[in-house]
Structure formats: C-alpha cells, structure tokens
Image (cartoon, helix red, strand yellow):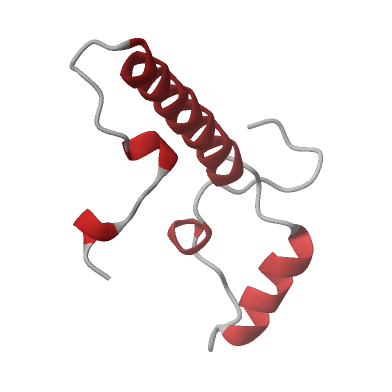
Length: 79
C-alpha cells in the first residue's frame, strides 16, 4: 500500500501552525524524549552476573573483555 493511501489520524492535512499539528508535534516530541530516556536507562544497566557467566563459558579462553559486554559492573560495585 502506498504511503499516500494511508489514512492515519495524526497525518491529517492541517494548515501550518494549526493547533492539531502543534499538538501532534508535541506528542511526538514527548514520545521521542521518553523513548530515548528508556533506551539510555537500559543501555546503562549493568550486565547480570548470570549472563556474564554464559559469555565466559562461550569464550574459547574463558574470559570476557569489558568491551564485549559494554558498561557492566559486578553486583555491589559502584559504577
């Protein structure tokens, strides 16, 4: 289906600067900001020890480099 054929409520044709368009933009900005915040929270979480153990077992030499797991800390350590 072509993009022009879709009839989405937030894609209504509105005059530039109309209240509906301004409201839709504000909603999209709020959603985008919240999604970025959630993503950053997940990325900055430490890697669970159980998962690190799985990675250690999968590595041929039994060690996991910090670059391979990103921003991880052992339980109880301060980041």
